[in-house]
Each structure stands twice: as structure tokens, then as C-alpha cells.
Amino acid sequence: MNYWLVKQEPSVYNYDKLVKEKKTVWDGVHNNLALKHIRSMKKGDKALFYHTGDERQAVGIIEITTDPHPNPKEGDKRFVVMGVKPISRLKRPVTLDEMKTDKIFKNWDLLRISRLSVMPVPKEIWDTIIKKSNS
Image (tube, rainbow, N blue to C red; front, side, top):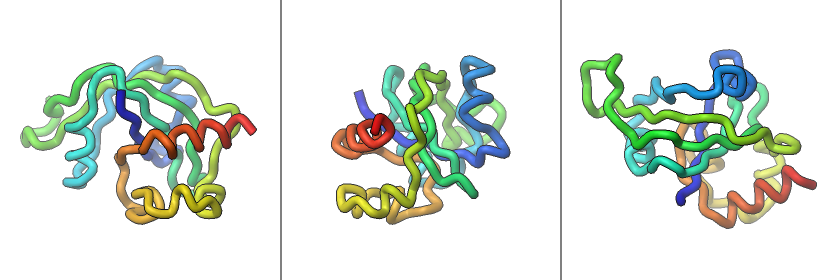
């Protein structure tokens, strides 16, 4: 299993809405690097749901429910989507500011490539975020 982070502006789509809907198709990604990451996802992988904008915090855990596939709403096969469902809300959100103060996050894409909407999460960073959310 691999770990990921997916970002969304909470005013557009947030974790509570995903919980209410029970599942969704993660679409709308057009950045080439983010699309490359989506193509690497597998059914069963886990991802952090991250609220961007004013919140800038990891708020929940989701599961990838389908392998990536071309978005049927787009005419270009390189625009891929995947199904997701909520697993659990983090016990407490872990903010970007918290991550910036911990050296383990220093070289992670979230801090280096701030506009990237989909990225891998190394296991050590995943475990640290989960630990921080439980403290």
C-alpha cells in the first residue's frame, strides 16, 4: 500500500461533504506532476485529505477505491481520475504551520511545491502526521 495527500479548497469540496456522499470521483486535476502521481495510485491505497486555502491542514483519511482511469467527462485520456471514500477524520487537524516547524517535513513536496494538489506521502511522514493528530 502507498500513501498520498490530495488537496482541495474546502469551499469547493470538503471532507464533511465526502463523508455525507460516502464516495466520489476525484477529478479536475490537470497538473502534469499531479496526474503522474494519480497514475501511480492503486485501489486500496490511503490518502490524507488536505484542506487548502485559509485552512491549510490535513483533516482526514480517505481510501482509493478504484485504479486510475481516464476521466469520461474529458476528451483527453491523459486526464485521469480515481474513486475515493472516507475512512476517518483525523482526531485533530494537522496544520501546515505545524509541519513547517518539524524537520522531518523539510524536503516533502507539500512544503517544496505548494501548488501541487496530489503527492506521495513517505511512510515516515504519514506516521508523523497520524501521531501529531492524536496528540
